[in-house]
Length: 364
Image 1 (cartoon, rainbow, N blue to C red):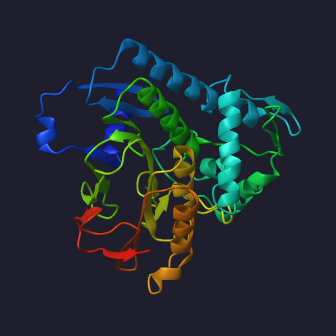
Image 2: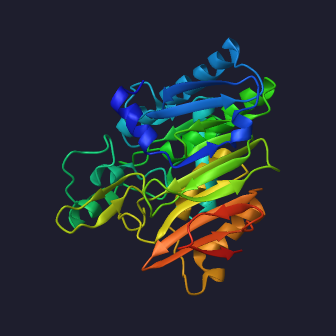
Image 3: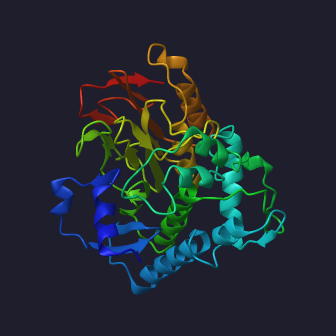
């Protein structure tokens, strides 16, 4: 359970949130909601068609509690804790959830050509994003410190994982962090619980960056360059029973007190340094929640040529996701050197309303 201060900070750090029209809010419908505190964030379940039963609340709480214990880096019985403290060559047994998340991670790692790399934990530590964030006095690591940490960040494909026998072998001094995929995995399972129990309207939000939407009217996506403002409203009238994930470079970061430079928590495992691509946020609506959770982070590391946006690496990869992964809509927000663009397959006016005219819409 997180303490009150962490709970408050979680609310302040919301990336995306669902908003209903006044008409729906004033409707005389049965309405219920519940909140949980797991994964160091707030989980909110809100339904619009009938009460959340004790059994459903218990199923959700049991699921979240189990997944937190399975993947918490600081919990002594978790798989992550055991792997990170093991000696090279040690074999660690896995349960079903752990094997499933690792299997997803392997798939996304391969799909993204290594951009999604769960063995990045040594770099998170040297950049002071782990084990505790934020630190009181951030000091930019030296290049030597970054390179030393980088030595312990292998290609994730080098780590031996047996999905059938549910085992993983410790690789060198590598350490794992699966926080970039677990919430999406949890959203899919929790959404299934709601569906299986007959709920048809509402949503489930984990940290406001991973959501399962049973049905809703509108989704508002945060503006990454204007504090406390939304960038666009997405129409969801024709969509239901979908997962959604957003990743951004603006939620966790440090400002170097000497240079004033900003360092995001999104770190490139190839260089050891935080991203500088200018891709500020990526949202994927539809498809598999675990995949979307991981792939949106990987997208932040892709280069984007704003002068020829139709065939930039980012644009080409978004097209690939739309073709391969049953995603309904994608929104990538780019802001660098005075150029602001939204790269999307959605149609302005029909699928979404743009709220900041600083941005140019690039359709793919």
